[in-house]
Image (tube, one colour):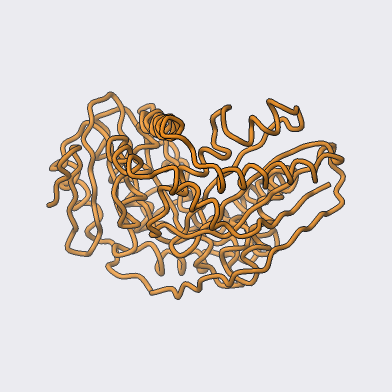
Length: 409
């Protein structure tokens, strides 16, 4: 059993290899779940959308429960059962009033070790996922992100849409779903996480009781790093009222030493604050856009810095030039010590607010443990950011290659 020195975070590993991490915090709610190191990146060409489809359909029944029993198990105590899929991970978790630890652990274990994927239920859920695909296609903001990622990661599993296509999900049956869980929902490929008032001893005991039957090892999936594609500038004629542009560039991944500096740079450039460089330059000063933001997505071996803006069709090129100008400014004009201190304080404050959610802090704990990274508490993050200087921001901005772009116009 390992203990964190600053926060009440304890961890252990079961005999089958399942890692368990528990963060004890006061409160009236608790969140726990499993983080699985498998997502759409692990799919073969004939499996596009399978990771997400399985995440939907593990709720559709086990040998002990039918689907209505699954969905009511947490709802009847005022809690909820949820899940989501990314390109490299799957999360299945509960949020409930404190005191429901055993109920949650037993249900989660049943779902990830004993789901049956009844064909009748799969047919119904296929329609739900098909509607989800349509909703994304109807949203130009979502569609431009998906198409851009497919272009910048061309030929690599990182590129394709997490949802798959209607054609691909039509092929999935219970055997395909079961093969996926047998391959990936295993102890060595998974972390159980808990965030709430229960003691670590109680958490570990419950997890050991219900997850000991979990298969120990996963098949090793070969992960191929995408090749770097040359810069592209593409405009597509679409029937939208507004032009939607995504600009982006490949960056380092989760384990790069500059990842915290890159995150701070991204927050300064186009983070959620209204005082971000891009919001001030494009919206506040010139009124060219309703929304503009930048985002940073880090994978195990690479990452993507993305900048989105929506504007009138005639303003696309002007907005793109302003984006590039703001990056050049950050590459050539070091922020003062005062400006850096304010940027650090703002970023840590945003992380602190997000961490105030029992759900978000639990998911962050699970993901950081799954990826063998330190849990990013505000205090620990503040110490890391204090070592990042204005010159570091200049260096990071200067090292960015030329941005590619895709515009729906």
